[in-house]
Image (cartoon, rainbow, N blue to C red; front, side, top):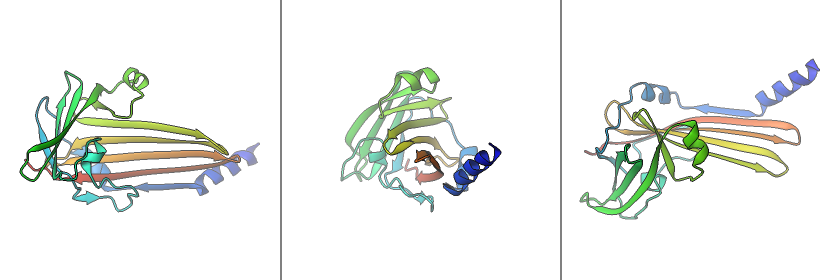
Length: 190
């Protein structure tokens, strides 16, 4: 029995991959609070992408489910009391060319269990906005992917998105796993 446990432990270690952006923790420690009904304008393209990031966020508009090819900036307006996040794409003259209203629920187990819609965001103490998803597939084995993004303002007011992804799989009784933490920074415009 002990040999089986040792074999499983070693196979998990050998078959796992971990990549963590060391800058993520420093950014998170110095975050600012979002203000109710304030608007925040950011560049639509990132100024910083983790080197380890395999799927960088190249377009902030697409990340928030709104897109326009003429978009230059993105404005977000958190409305915590009315539970919505207004996202607007702005052109180079800072005029609104596309808009979307997304759900913004309080981060609680009850809301996480109720809301299965992928376009729902959550807020935690008004300091960060959270985006979560989970996907499990049963094929030749069982695999699950867990994704959490923490969206917050850094000490300079730039938008930071720290993505945490965990993948677990059991294929032919062989466990596989992976974890990554990466960050993207979008410069504050106003």
